[in-house]
Length: 321
Length: 126
Image 1 (cartoon, rainbow over the protein chains, first blue to last red):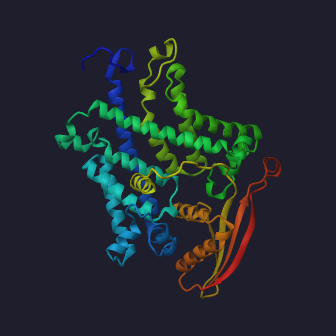
Image 2: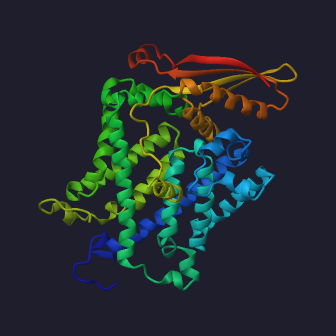
Image 3: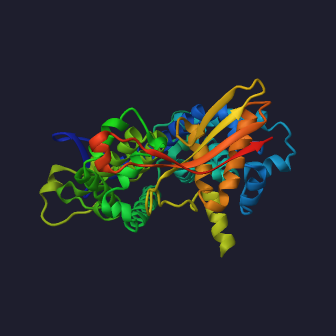
């Protein structure tokens, strides 16, 4: 690999150059986006497959009258599709749809026919999300957005079977386009954390330091770790630190993540990742935690790889730009 | 403008809010049901405790109806599910309530668990 002037390189060992850092790290972030989203879909299908009839049919837990009332007039939805095609056996249709969803997610994982598999996953998720938004939660919203990014970003050109088999997928990704894709992810993620943090700042429980205590006492979040976590959180000082730590991590994230100096950006990302690991382990929201970790690493995972010892010693502030 | 925003949100997922657990966390709404089966057996179910993905999604529906004026609708949703789950069942007792967390001090001293406070209840005959 030739060395061009003013190009940053990633060192895995003293004096050993392994790749053109900025460009290749961003390519790696696209892989995280594609594979992470595919794993999330596969897990979602596996835990939901037996309850599809109750979740996503007009005879399920959401009454038909509400489904029709809340249906978005601006886009596709599953109930509208069922009605349009006069589908009478909804459960069988749904199972077939989920089998296609499952196959498409596997192809997305492998990076084979990536654009098509991403499109199929996106359309099926869109149908479910817009048709049954009463049964959706945070995980589904983020999965929707990340599937959209999978559809429009060149995720099939890196570490994929497409790149092995097809000539078109081997064409290098335009550096400016890749940059734009990652910037879009980064901007979106910053908006997510800033919005979430500011919304929490308006709450009395977060300021008083009791919000985490209230959350872990909800039966829906009980896990094998609950007893241990509750013992810790019942100490007011610790609960206060967790609440204010969450506020600082979320509100501060959009600002600190860019700062290279003293590894501030790395700490910002690490703290937010630890928060999601806590949510996954202590509150049992594994899928939500997973999709957020994927989002975090796809947008900013490079901060763990791009910082060099030289950057840490540099005078003044440096930024990941 | 609404149409444009609606279309953007509907096709990109961009209309989803990010204000999780805010402004406050609050108590959790749980629905307890007792269903009388044709053989006079009584089946007890609890919805909203997050035991699996299905229950978590059901919990999301209940959360939408977390309003005094919507408890009746919430009960009907729960009853419809129970009648579908237990074919032949014709009588369901529903209790909607909240789990209130103990204070930190009470938990530290005596490991007091969360308390279920019933908000409303009723019997539905199908």
